[in-house]
View 1 (cartoon, rainbow, N blue to C red):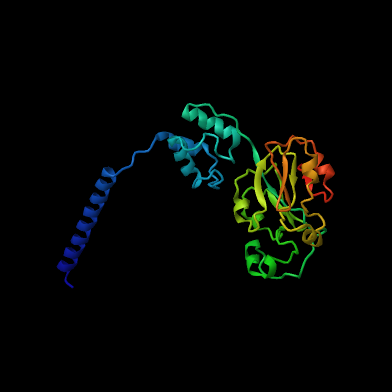
View 2 (cartoon, rainbow, N blue to C red; view 1 turned 60 degrees about the vertical axis):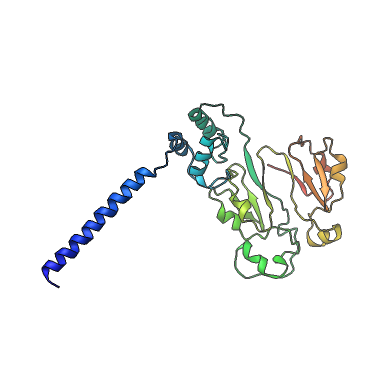
Length: 266
């Protein structure tokens, strides 16, 4: 190819590049979506964990929702009351009460209490256990598998496996819900930080089955229900559950539980 041909080709490429650049620039101006400047302020005030615990896609998503009035100013579980107050100032509203929460693992079937059906030596990921017999080696099909998938998902180092069962450090927990999302057994829930008692079992098997599988499993005897003065405990499908909004923390249910599966939360 001659020098002239190369120069012509280069000129054409340059012209096309300039045209495309101008077109994109003008299109950007023409189709620019105006955003409320408070979104950037709120996004800067948020902790930036992008955990999704608020129910929105990251901190930017929450910021946009707050500005639109679709989410409360104290919706960030990680930032808590301090961040809620700061965002309330940006929005010019009252922050309202922020209820601190924490994750809780509803299982007491540790190595000393739960029976096992076989020795498992496969992938150390709780989510993979759905592909093995009975959903895992523990005799209780509802019990914590203890391979720490929830611990790996926690960015706050608030959950660890102790003696075969995941345990939450409520002082470190930010209630973001990442551990809840990855637990294949659905054992982890978000409860009030100041909750006094909880049922450390999620099994819905009949009494004889539970007794054989775990020394501390709930058998649905209903003694907790009969002895609760506020009606905070109910039993459905052989499983006791505490309504934390009604519970006053008297401990009567825990005292009467013959299996000692209702425990005080430290």
